[in-house]
Length: 119
Image (cartoon, rainbow, N blue to C red; front, top):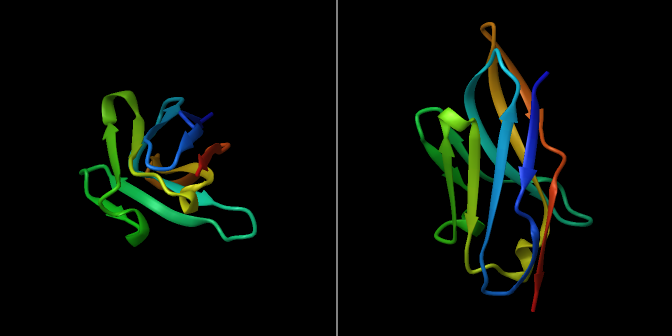
């Protein structure tokens, strides 16, 4: 049973920083890619950043230069370092994983972690 366990959300002042972590628990899989999405109230879920097994990264334009996604494959963990946070970054952040299990792709979501930015 694969689970994505997120941590690191919370309340931060505008201009501050937060670091999110997401660990894929379980066994019998390889990680193709992991990433972060977010959903603010009344808005659709949107991509924030992704990182592939080979460490290729992709960022939403709105976070480029402020957020950094990294991974530790041995720990099956992905991190999102968020700096210079703005009020518009406030949302529930969801971890996402694209896993290879016996040569088939599976997609998983975490439970979400709240990021609140105060002005």
